[in-house]
Length: 164
Figure 1 (cartoon, rainbow, N blue to C red):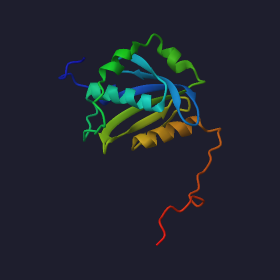
Figure 2: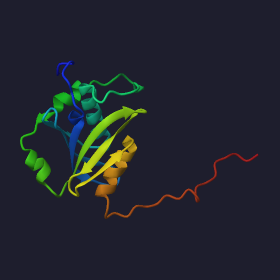
Figure 3: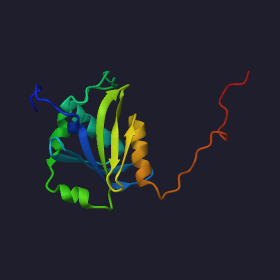
């Protein structure tokens, strides 16, 4: 663990996400911390968010404006950080154009969510995001450009309100 008095810049919160696989429901890949110079694999989007959250909690940067509530005991970030391995070859991680590669930079943790920027390295595009949901939608829209998305219509949904 690093010294708490050590200054951590917002650059420490930059994480490279190299996605291996993506389907309509989820994606998997590798998260690389520039600050620790280590990477950890993830199998689902939820696991990716847990890895990132663990990293930001360990860095205490960016500091959250509120404490999140949980149903169960608080998980420790030690489990995730101990799973991180030194990245042998950054060029290998970044050089494969078959993968969608993003740099996520979380600047703030406000309103129980993250705000920052996401850069899609394969296309050289950067956009800000205002929530975790928006971050996931931006990443999904980047890698699902050739798939047909079914639009859900609420017009055909049954009316569940009780009749008087």
